[in-house]
Image (cartoon, rainbow, N blue to C red; front, top):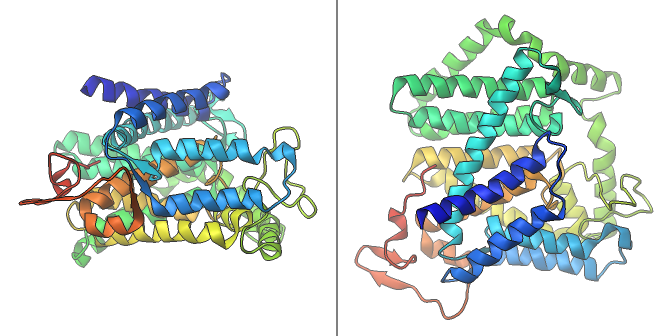
Length: 425
């Protein structure tokens, strides 16, 4: 059974890695076929099926946004909605059962290992000057674009920091710290300001959480990191070239947010024109927007938050805000496993900030979409283990599922108290 779980975790992980890598081989529809096959297998074989009410609300809002708008056919909103539901159903909190929970934890662990490996190799390739490391958008490493390397490098940095804190062998701890440093430099070299700021914010949250209640220790850690960064700056100054160039160009154009401001303004106008249900899932108002492709139906939202607001209106924006707010409160308050909560909270804060400037939260084909909703699925597992009674407020029970009080707690997984389940990362 363990082998089956491992294989089921590896197959989707490899599929998503292929999607975001520099390999010219594209899975196309085979990517969705793989995910659908795994999802159906786990859904049918598992027990105790439950739906998360907030994500159900989000799906209903997306459907309503299509139903109440006249959307050009080339946007293919229904196809994209089906893909959104299927991928989010597999990795996100939309639906859970006894097999989907361990699958998501295993997939999360495997995917993190693969991402860290790709980022570290990308940095080494950039450091020695391999021509293959220069791709679309500049330094892309082993990824398909520099704007994919940068956020993935930030994620790798946070994961490596967590590994370093968990390592009991001193040599491994230093190795992981080195991997975190290389990931930071890869993020810096790729040149995404949003990913860099979001990654630093996530790192600060991680250090705060693991030192929660120990202010002096937190201050010592931050001072040590800052001191090392300052004294080592001459060694890594060259990696700031691209990001400094972007900032200089933005200032010449009149502001640091010049590249995104027009897209944001368009999203706001679309929201004002249709504040309740938006202009339509996976689409834009073609009368005021030119950032779309009539052949592929792709759009450039410029921001995930504004995309949800403009495409699905308040009806879709509210459940997403409630979902993320609940998770943020959980990772802030949880004291049962500070390191796991620190990692999940750091990643969640990273995405909360990064999504201000990148619009992938509704794009089922995006690697960042996949990771974000997998993170949401893992957070839901940890939240349910933390306090299942509160968790029920955000859940719809199906097929007559009932809770059974036990002497050790609330038996939600059949054989053991959820609070004792191992969800460490």
